[in-house]
Structure formats: structure tokens, C-alpha cells
Length: 154
Image 1: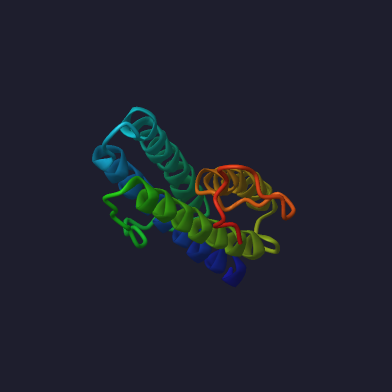
Image 2: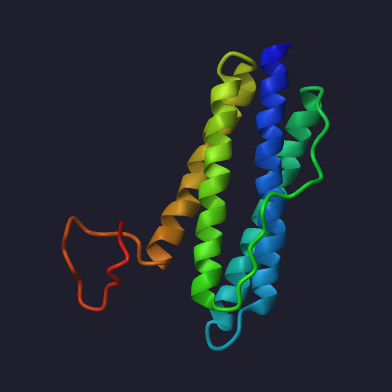
């Protein structure tokens, strides 16, 4: 039962990050201004909806395992500029990924079906991180500096 208890705790950490994503992305959708609003209001709104879907799935998984889903979101970052919003979104996704990976480790010996489900979620989260890395200009192309490309790569 200890393995399942640890898994539930780790999934509740994931849930807290997904809840934070709902709020943070919704706030950014409301706050983005200027020409960027035409594109990024929908971007943040869609991300908020996806976080809600993930939160619901994780919460249902926790309940199915006999746990009580948390109602406490993780750290939420507000921002007033698009660049700061995108950086905050990337930080949130990276923190959520770390929580997903811890849950994956906990699922290893606790519940095979949950482990397989988490693997799918990790792949999806990685796609979000990859996209935000591109949007924030943190992707480098093997040392090639393209005209107009950011030098933020790391």
C-alpha cells in the first residue's frame, strides 16, 4: 500500500501544477495586449483548457486509486508582458514535467496501467515544452546562427 500512497502523493503534485496551469494560462489570456493578443490570447486560453482536461484526468486517476485529489494549485506567476508570460509558461511546463516524471517513477512498482498512462502524458508534456522552447527562442541549431534568431539558447 505504501507504493500506492506514494503514487497518489506524486499524482497530487502533478494535479497541483495542472491547476496552476489553468489559472496562470487563463490570466495570461486575459492580460495579453497589443498585436500579440490576436494570436496569444487563444494560445493561452487553449493551454488553460488543456490544463483543465489534464487536471480532471489526474484527479479521476487519484480517486480511482483511492486518494483524495488536491484543490491547491502550485505556484502561479502573473506577468504583464508577452515575453514574461511565455517564460512563465515554460517554467510551469518544466515544473509540471518534473512532477510527471516523479509520478512515473512512483508508478513503476505500484500500478502498471497508471504507469502506461503517465508515459503518454509525459510525451504530451514534452511537446508543450518543445513548442515553448521554440517560441521563446531557446532552441539552437547545432551552433548555426540564423538571421534574426535569438541567442537565448541554452
